[in-house]
Image (cartoon, rainbow, N blue to C red; front, side, top):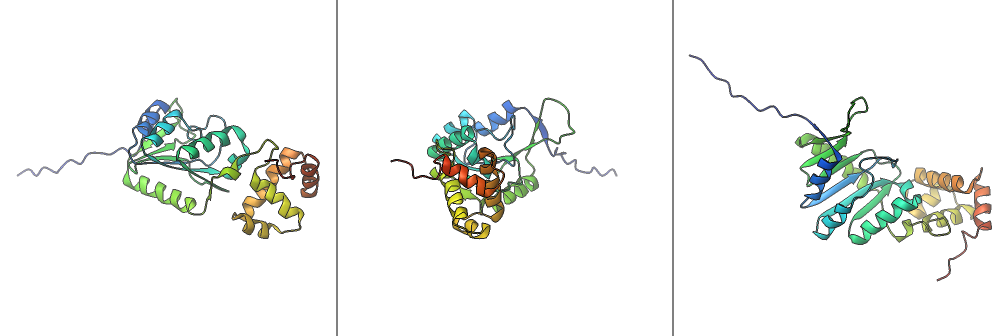
Length: 225
């Protein structure tokens, strides 16, 4: 007697995806879209908001988006994120975002393909429950301690966000990095990275010089209402 063994379908762990395919999946979201971006660089496929995000928000799809803190000092992207927040998206930033991913309805994960893979498809689609669960858990872990986006995250015409002005004010008053971090509700690492960004924009070689240059430019003066 011949015993026939059941044939189990082979589930491919991932399939290559064009940006058009990713856009189509996200545009069809019904409940929630998660966006994690570890680094904002030109051409990053998951970093830049797209028009269908606003349409999804109008349809009631929840958006949670994680970006590195330095997007707060990037006026063009900061303006786009501010518009998404105004439309109902939840945006938070963290000193370190360890995941580049896009999750649709907890049913589909989009991840960058490995660098060694050649070809036009730079993204991969995953539907394996283990991959989805791991990605969402990592996202939620960072989300819990990330800083919510707010009006203070938008760079002013004077070149500093409200949080950066508070940073310089506290440091010039003699506060330690630890004290500043506690006052701002961020990590010490974030304080140092913010200060490094401010020094770079001012062309300053030290924190003291940065404070002097910011004061000379009037960046620390209260803005007229």
